[in-house]
Length: 546
Image (tube, rainbow, N blue to C red; front, top):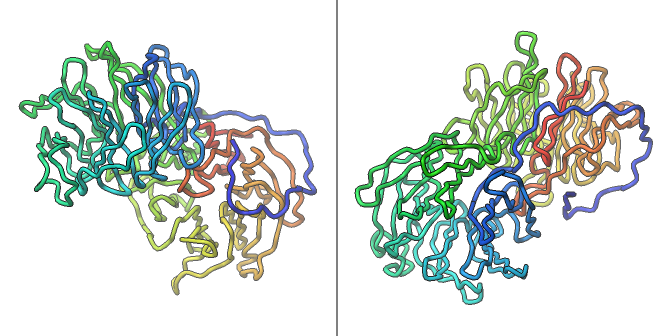
C-alpha cells in the first residue's frame, strides 16, 4: 500500500542515486499478523471476521487453523473499522471509528453507509433485527439505526460513560460494559428518551462491577454472559447475582470476544494483535499469534555488551535482544496500566529513552531500568518525533493546522522554531549538527550546523518519496527510511550523494483517516556494533542489517 496525502510533493525525480551491493535483509523480529485485533464475530459462512482499526482492514480467518483467508480493506472515509456484526440477511456491518460512519456490506458486495458521529464504536443486532451502536472516546451516546441505513439515527441515551462492546440478552435487554465505571450494565432501550441524564430517565441496571476496564460482553448459547477486561481477564458473569468467575487470564489489552455455534470463545487483543480460542471446557490455544502491531520508532541502548533494541509499538514499548531477536520486555502504554502514553517514536537519550506520541500529544523521557517517566511535556501539538540535541529537546511538531508544522527546540527560554515544515518526520543528530526530513516535500534538510541554526536550512537532498525515520551511521552518513519507495537510503550529508542500502522493505502502511500522515513512522537506528535496525510498520517486523 502507498499512502496519499493532500500535499504536492516537491520533485519526483531522485538524482544522484547509485546502487552498490545491497545489504542483505534479515528479519530479526516478526510480529503479529494483524495491526491489533478489535471487534470479532462469526459470519454466516462459519468464518471468523476480525476488525483491525490500526490495520484498516477486516480479516477473514479460518476458525480452526487460524489461516487468514482474505483481507477486506475499506476505502477512505469508511476506514478504521473497530467493531462488526452481521444482519439477519447476512450483511456485514462495521463501525468506522474516526469518520463516524456505519457501513453495510451486503452478501452481493453492495456498500451503503450512514454517518452517525465520530467515535461510533460498538455495534449489535437485537434478536428481533433492531440495530444499535454507541459512541466511545470521541462522543458518548447510544443510538438505534435503521438496518437499511436510511432513516436518521435515533438517539436513545447520552452520557453513559462510554458503553462499549454490546450484546442482546435473552431477557430482551441490551448488555454492555461502561468503560469508565468498571461495571457491566443492562438497559431497557425502550425506556430511554434520549435524556442527558440516562440514570434518571432510563431503566439501567448494574449487572456486575469491580472490573478494571471492561471492554466487551457476549452471551453464549446457554445464555451465560461473558466479558473481557483490559487487565487480561476473561470473566463469566452470573446475571442473577453479579458473581464473577475468571475463566482465562491473558495478557493485558483485551478488546472483544465472540462465540461460535459450538460455544468456542474467541478473544481479541488490541494491544498485541492476537486471537485466542477458548474451548467450552476452558482449554485455550492461540489462533493468531501476537507481537508487534505497529512498529514505529527504534532506539538502541547497549547494556552489558548486549544491544537492547527498543521499539515504539503504540500500545506498548517493546525491547529485544539485538543479536537473537528474543523479546526482553513489554511495557504497556495505555489506560493507566503504566505512565506511558501510546509511543509512536523512541530515541536514545543516554541510558534513558525519549518517546513521542502524536495520539496523546505528549513527549516523555523514560528510564527503562527504573521503569519510571522522568519528564513529560504536553505542550506540543501532534509531536511526530523527538530527540535530544545539545541538552535540549527537539521535536517534529505537526501542529493543529496548515502552517503550524515545524521543527521546534525546547529551551530554558521557551520553545524556539528551528525550521517551518510541511510534515516534519525524521530527526538525526551528530554533535552540533541536526538534520530533519519533510515527509510531504521529500526533502532532507540540515537545520543546525556546528551548533548554529541555519536560516534558511540547507537542503541536503530532495525528491525523496515520504522520508520517515533517520539516523547517523558510524561513518557520519545519514540513513533514511524512504517509505514511499520502500527503501533504506544512505545520504552523504556534505554532498547529497545517495545510495540504496536495502529495497523491498515492508514499510509505508496507510494512515487511517483522521490520524497523522506518518502514522507509525518506520524508523532506523544504529547500534555501537554498527548493526543497523529498521522497523517495518506494514509488515510488523524489525530488520537488522550488518
